[in-house]
Length: 53
Image (cartoon, rainbow, N blue to C red; front, side, top):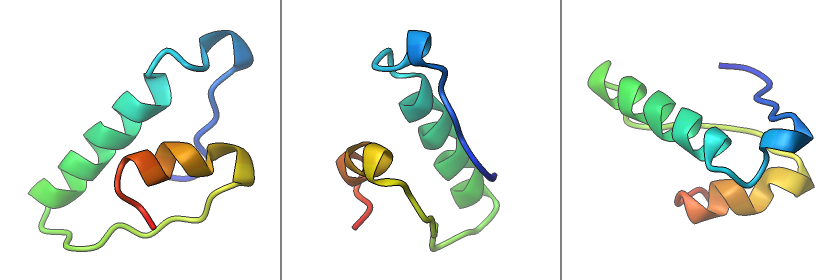
């Protein structure tokens, strides 16, 4: 997955979180042991809340 963007009207409703959780779950089902990402400063707290460092 590349370049996740949520339009302002839908931010803070859990959309990006739901997409990311589903993506991580799919990756795990496929045998992935590591999920790697780059983030903007604006999205950093979303990823940190999901366990990314």
